[in-house]
Length: 463
Image 1 (cartoon, rainbow, N blue to C red):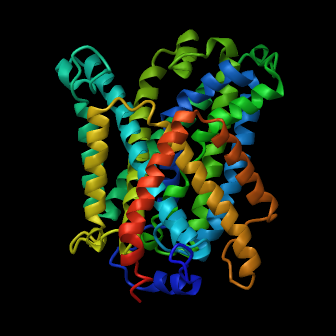
Image 2 (image 1 turned 180 degrees about the vertical axis):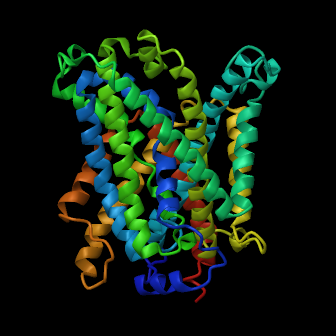
């Protein structure tokens, strides 16, 4: 058989999930849901709601979030079925290996390694910006050379804070999933509590007149808003990479996927209603629309609250995506597609420490030394490509293996997967050409590595 098309047996993967991989099973339903929420809800909840309303949808931004949420839910439901069916570390990489073959699995795994590393770097830069502002407010001033990467400001040489936090999260994940999960739980609780406070307090200052006209840019504007905010409602896929550290993965993974997206979507909708009710939509096109709306009604203290939520929110995003990247790398190495040296589990902490520390170091270098605003768009095309493969795989597997026992079944197949595929293709087409060029270059590099190394060293080749 062509090595590119050979597949892992689903029955073999299910058996593999019950074997001792060396990873420690410590995650319950809440911890998994918190990882999903950590990946979904970041500082964007305080920015995208206002920007999408001002530029695209007006008060109808709530419809934008509903449409984006339904599109994202289509992919989430497909992820949930796979998570219950194949509870093995690796997420989209492992699912593709079982359904589409080794070549597709390699490409999506290689794709996600880049995506998650870039997410970490981009988010670390955002966290650095908030911390720098807070340090300045309390009288601590970093040297100019340490305030940003070259090209981001006069005298900037390195973004020291982003490098430190990238390495710190890598260290935390190395020291054990149990401690890492506790830290992530705390960060998620802080940011969810603050988001709820903002929504509840803001509800008392809503002026219904601000909701008129409700759809000033027409339905086309609503769809434009949906395309913009779609990237705020994915990240739940990160929790499926922790399958082999879950206590009861077949039961808890599907639930955690659905719960994390549902909770996040409710919060985004609540924020949309409050912000467009407090201020007219055309005043929200700025970097801090929520803070500005609250300052307008005299609640200046809310800006500090939002800063605290941003700090906690971004830390949990870093945790979720570094967890995901290291577990995919671990899975690819265990399968022989990358050197098995990376699949070594720490004897004391029971974590895949080598890929974790390497991703931490790479993301630290990228965030500290590179202005990566343009490169960040690669994150979008990577995620959308994974969504297309997962939704397609569900339809293929339903036809080829209908007899498999599924702990969770995606409803309305093939309609739901087709919605996920259609919306993902629509968004990919809308990305700028330079993003496509960079994506193709990365895929070509990955294909060369597979042909020269992966296909010869693959576990399936040597069985």
